[in-house]
Length: 360
Image (tube, rainbow, N blue to C red):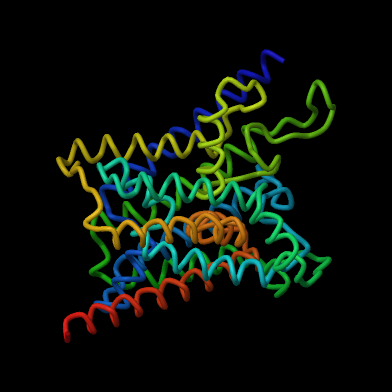
């Protein structure tokens, strides 16, 4: 048991370091899914979308390599399922995408903004976490389970793009994304390459930590195979919705011995500290609060939509849009498409509102 406790600490430490590195990368390079979509919608600038595509490409190739080398079991990941939860991922993704725009960023960006001194994001963090926990185990969980979660398609062979029967599909898709990204010479800057390859590499590293370093073939008490320090009991990489909920739960019930640190909580703490350290080092740390009651109201609604939507969709821009998509999960494909669509609708509405205001 002493060895098991030591190994658990190693997994937690690795996720903390992964989060720390992610916080530094995203703060310095402005890697942001919502910002990337906004750049395209408002300015026609695809630079940050290419950062995101590059990260997905690296994550896909890395996940495929870990699987082929036998270092992780792809059937044991959080995203491996024989059910295509198309309605849950569609509705949840739309909610999350719409919400992250009016809340000024996704789950990871919320943590980065807190690290940079943004008090608005502290409010979003709390509201998103409470809403996510309610959708995991509370009142909105009952609603979710009795509505959208009842609609699905059974796919015994697994709800994955591997159904296409194309050999080495993960490598091919990942390489194709990298080729699309790298063919643009203006993308070849330190920040862009650091963002795309750095974020993708962190996701791959967390797959290895969770699925290989933290794998115990036979737990000394239960004699079952276990993956240490994950809330799901399966292999996890990075996600920033449910882990925020578990972070609040751990902080509020710290004295309860049943509440233990998980890999997700460690990653949340790492991103916060990494972003804070980077903001100080680059002298970009600035306190920022709400401009007016309308600003507060938008961020409150956005936080609720992200919390409820992120859990319903089984992930956020990182959970489904990077970690999940790297496994070739069909649920992740639907969720990612819905998140993008929800964000575009929200951005268009914001632009139309500003135009009407300017004309008055």
